[in-house]
Length: 90
Image (cartoon, rainbow, N blue to C red; front, side, top):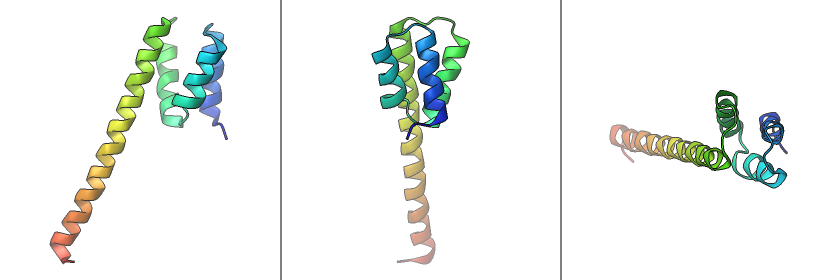
């Protein structure tokens, strides 16, 4: 099921004249969460007509940021479990 933000991203990309296949690849395969779609929409509203290369670079940067956030949350959870074991034992 496609989110409303993903649909909006697809339509904005199309309206800026990017190829349909690229729009679908970006919106539905790579930027398919509300977080990533919202970040890309922000970029598209700030930058008038980015080149295709710049658009893809921004997509990769957003995906990299998302991956770092996920890793940070996983590490924080693991550290919380370790701290709990230290406090209460096994």
